[in-house]
Image (cartoon, rainbow, N blue to C red; front, side, top):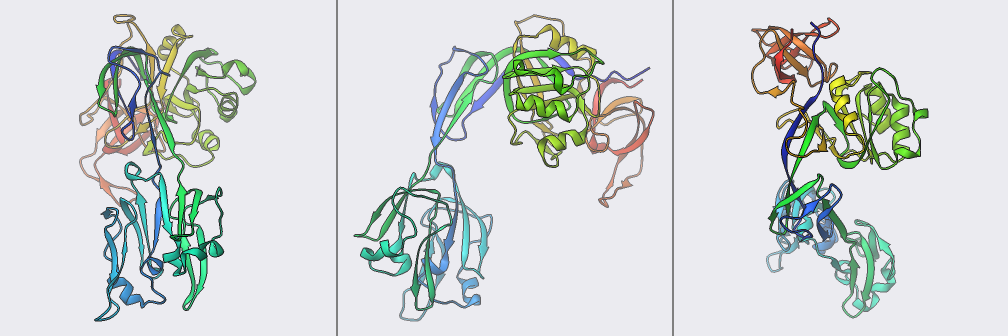
Length: 454
């Protein structure tokens, strides 16, 4: 008997936490009805910049010995530091005060170089200041009234983080003052030798994602939305969250080509039963489709669409506007009649979708959510992923290349570990795929699916 290969379809009461990356403003109240595009919370913040600390400039060193600098540096990569915390200290003599450099921000040390006397700190956004003040006179060791002579920027100009803000000749060579953050130069204070840089603020809005009701407010962080929906779990996806009116094209077994797409698909989520290729992906994206649900696509077509190799461990952060979800896997696979029937029956509904896929620990599958009333429909899960060790005769789905997304029947659980190209020795199973091919796969690279494979 042929294997039944289709995605999970079930009706659920759904709960989704919608959180801001940083504390902000909640725009809805408990009990409010929301739709996928409803903005439920927003925040404004300054994105954290990578700060380059020039130890030579900050410590006022004309020259330094490499071994001395290595001993002077007091932090290492991965260490969390706070604004004003000492990064390096160097004693220049018995009667002289130690020369020090402090962290300009709260953040994580990402890079330390004694050779170049520099430390890179990734600033934490929640503590980022909207205005940065640079003491150019101190960095260049010049009179405050002279700083304009050495500045390479003027008020109103944009400066990038790490750019040379000012430079002057010194006894040991050129002295530099760097822009610690990206922003616009607002003011030059010639009385104190200071330059004020205003950093751009970023606005983040969080939407409800699904149709439903706000059932909880999480302080100033976000909300919980509850809704009823039919959930289709895919095998693989690209792109993050999206929503749009569902539009079904074609019929099972009948290919859809780029010529079949027109301006009508703009802002909609397409469901295509037949196999699709690279041309459909590009055309749908160009015409403004918000999502595309298909049975399968050749891996190389997806690579061409993205313009780079696909990361198989975790997806969902790709820089694309259209979310892509495959219900069956890689290859020119047809969408199962069961799934296609559900989508066709709900054409015109506003659906939510998320392409995020994680195939390792904490596995996550891409999803399509179709709003439904409680008790509506008879859709249930014909196959469900379960947590257990596979046994002969059981149905599994392979979650790594070259058979990613393929279903098969376990023929044998190998009693001895098998060595792979990575030189790892792993417990494995012998699997017969739907086309009759047999392959050996590490147990960690398969998902056990409920139901017999026979």
